[in-house]
Length: 144
Image (cartoon, rainbow, N blue to C red; front, top):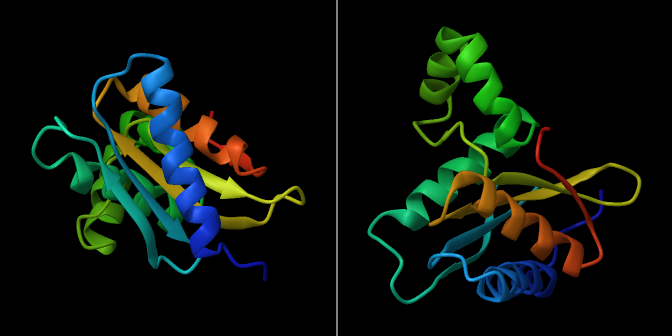
């Protein structure tokens, strides 16, 4: 199984924030996990509101735990709220079912990890995460 290296995770995190600055998004927190759920990178911009990093972690970890981007989790939460409540409990509360949790995939579609972003609108969080993943030469899956 290909591994998401620290260098690649750092590139994703830094590129995510760079994209957000270019688009004048609000201050963000970004987190990157590898495929086994190990935290590889976490950056929080100056001015990011309290607990944004934890929200980003919940978006990324939830996506990774269920194998779908958090946009799909958002739809599940609407369509099957009891399932998402149970899944949230099963992953120790680390599941935030709104856009901004994006799977990192290689060209063959293998999941390498996930990125979570919080601080702006959920749609903008997702846009920034996707840009960071693409900047590292990888494929994003937001669960659309």
